[in-house]
Image (cartoon, rainbow, N blue to C red; front, side, top):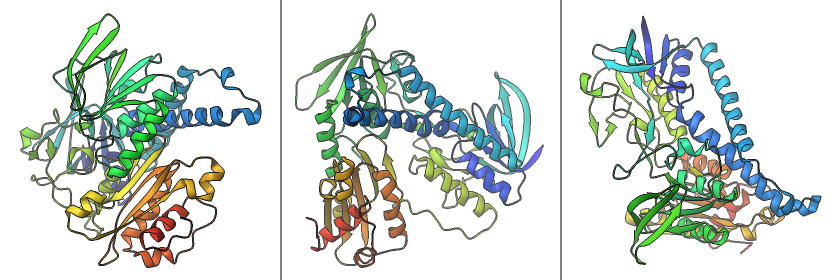
Length: 464
């Protein structure tokens, strides 16, 4: 069977590419080896946010329960029910995506795909070839898999990745999390809130190492305050087992070797492109450091083959993959779409406090030679935050002193993942501080923190 477009993978890159292709009149197929929605829907963004929402409700009840006659000693956590709720939400959204596939007439093929020359793919099930398809355009959107240190033994019961962490049958008493990127931070907050004793090990000098230094410092303060132990500038020497206990020997720069014990170790050191068994070598598609090389229109070096999402060297984020998918398809159709500004991508962590950012950090701005203006506004000075009794965190803005360009924004606090979109749109429209400061924000609202932080950068702060 021949198609105009075949997409490998049905995650937020793959399924969006297939829908946009169908909308533009192309006969489209998607190949999926497991479940519609990919990692994001089944084992990533969606179930994780469900778990985090559950524990945020739990923390709110613990904080405010006595107002309604609920005492903390009466609370009983039903961990399996919280996990099953997250799976129900996954099923609900999966049905929605499947409906969209049917609505748009997309042919869904289940199995493992292997690329072949002359724009063909072969489908395998249980290692047996079951079908072959051809297409005018083949898009690789196979996503990523967890990165694991090959030096240490990996098993699905004791040393786990995010996938197993979303479906543990029982709550661990002690958990060691290796890595403090978004995955590590979100699971650290979830399991700590559920009653697990959590320790984070981070090889870099700061927690959340890719973030702005002020955000990282505040995050460490916040985690220290609630009892999440963390060791930065630390690496794993050895992992051994003693019956049901895992013994982790870590090396730190500031202290002597430390031995930690836990019943579960979670690897959260990132992801790597899932491209190992799809036949790239057979057709000669170029890779570099484990990622597929593409041009500005997501074309590989082989005509008719494209790649988007986690398999290429851009931000490993669902919303980035979806935009790359739309651009890739529209470029195939010859439409004049705007290229993605990868320096204006919102990056969010849904722990508590939440983290959201876009643009350059303070350090990056200085390294690029900008003379900068910086403004910060704490939520402790914001009326809405005080009334919500969630005053942790702040908003930090960075502007270029010469041209008044908004270089970056970094937030930590309650609901900041909902605030960052204003910054993304403003930067897209090349708004200066003058335009933002003359735009009225509602009161009381969390969005006032943005205008207040900009006012602070320009010596016009009213509430500081």
